[in-house]
Image 1: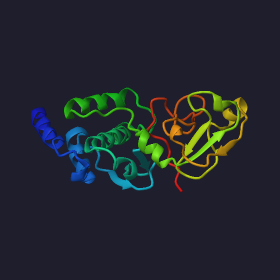
Image 2 (image 1 turned 90 degrees about the vertical axis):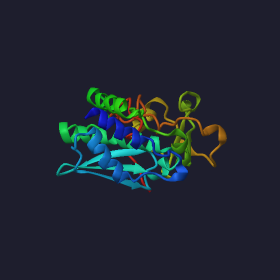
Image 3 (image 1 turned 135 degrees about the horizontal axis):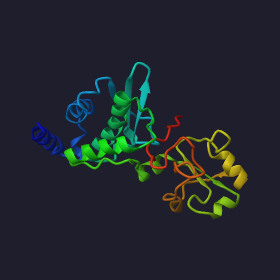
Length: 231
């Protein structure tokens, strides 16, 4: 019954959320959430930690044969509370559920169906799942390589010509926004000697999923689902 489910959920969410007590087992969370929120439909979902993901807290990928893999960023989530871990997992499980039940593979779009299940689970659980779960401070910590354009874009917000990355790769034609930048600015990117304090809180051309400087395949509401670039 719904009352019984809510009782179980309240007990489940009352766990100590201090990081010192350690995270709950993510595989047990998957099993629990599958029964509580997803009607037992997530039997083909695999969940795992990744120590290489530094540009997003979590992502859901789809494989042939109908299997979904939810990957969680250990570097980003280890600084966060258990509550935020749970919200990140549930966000990705909604994507998995929509794929498995509606063949909806657009993980960059948080439309009507996604928001319906997000709001439904929030009401049941008392959590605060939303369409974002990017963590700016942690993202900037791992984006240690910084370039700045010497052209006119360095004088304009919101980026002021900065590009921050977790790998040592100079901006170039491989970037989705490169042609737009070349046409509107034309400047060259020069690597910064060090991460200056006043740079730390700035957005960069690589952080925003919306607007002219981002990939046209990204939805404006989605900061989380940035494709990871690995070493």
